[in-house]
Length: 199
Length: 200
Image (cartoon, rainbow over all chains, first blue to last red; front, side, top):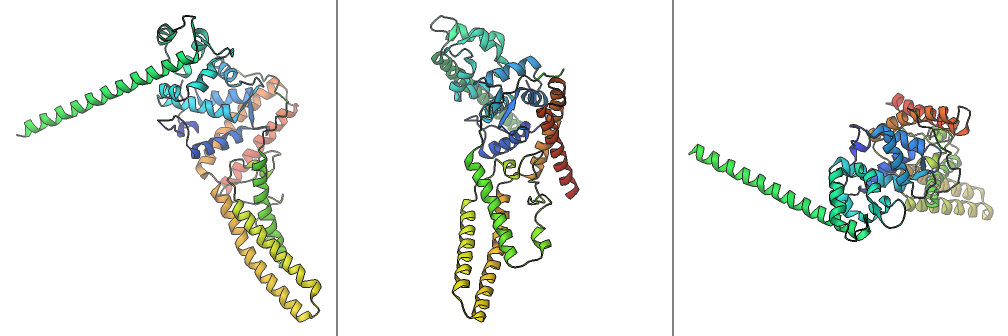
């Protein structure tokens, strides 16, 4: 899933730590939402939503429909600004490779979104439907349920999901530290080589 | 492949924030009271009307406050800030001034002193009129987004809505009120864009 280059959303950015938009960006987004709100109801219906997402991303029709169903948590057939904001944050997190950080910071709302049945559990099938939003591969999803389904019911409750996000972030941070260390070592070795060469 | 619109909910979930509406009416009042104060000075109509178009909306050269379709000017801006302090101060000044001018007229018997009082009141109203439109103008300026950003948003929205219009026409027909509303909205958006291009 990629954002269309040069589209309005492409120019927005998330804060890398909290994975939220700045006030200035929210204001711009609110104005954009308002322009798309053709019927003056502070909402987007399914048709407007489809054409918006189709225009700004490379998502397919089926994917757009399930995203709409996920966001329409009140089942009114329309998306309000709150849901729109949530969607934009998810799109930007994906675009900037901050999916793990986003899930860690906003584990509760993400869990509630994926909990389609409302039974405070996420099944593998439902999670699998939406893994394209969080850039989770099939095998990663299988490993996730294998490692974190502590209760053994093939469903993730919130604690298990939260644990997954914490460990994911921990792994990510360790990987980043290792990469930074390797970079520094390479720089030092290059510098020492040049020094020897000059002598 | 076009998306068939499902039955759009007609549930009138009024999510308009009453605070935001009062903000927009405050800005509008500021411009309206400015016009009234100017009218008291017997200014030529052309000078009073130069800031407004034929439909009575204030003309802005940087961003068109003209809302597309049937939307009113106030509903057009939902992201503006509240210039409450400016509103209240200007309105209080105007009211005080009007109050003082009304008190003078019934009590005065001497016509010369009456004329002088009127002159002083008109001078102070001139001062208020000088400052009030600027305050309203700057209050509006502070709440605006940069013009290139607005242009980008509107151009993109126009493309999206044009495609949505085709879906509406295929799905619910050309004569449906929602289709007509969308069509009017798109025309309004195109009008606004062309006005801006013409000004530039």
